[in-house]
Length: 113
Image (cartoon, rainbow, N blue to C red; front, side, top):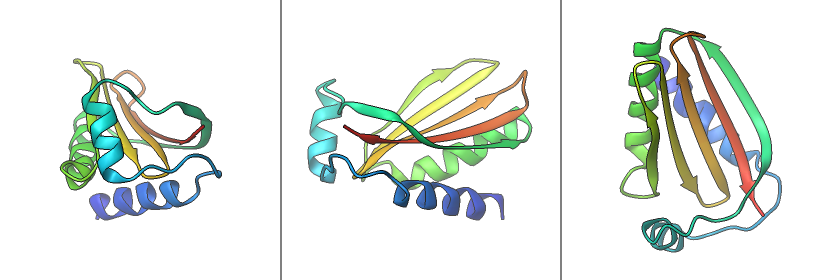
């Protein structure tokens, strides 16, 4: 159930992007693999939910695993107290962060400039 809710949230956040640049899957994969990330605009959607660190990491990985292979997904931080993953989709960047001290998941979405 949590996986479904997180998937729906990520899809909803992605479809709420403010108009900006749009990239194809192949453009994004090529850019990110070269280390040339699309310019990210300001965050235009943030959602937070209380949950344990371990549950958060599992939920984020379940959703991001569905995007991997199609879109570039990178783990930015993976420590004992923070876990952050970014995914570059056609119309923007989704960042999922798990914080052990805060016992929270934060999802943000930003369109491209």
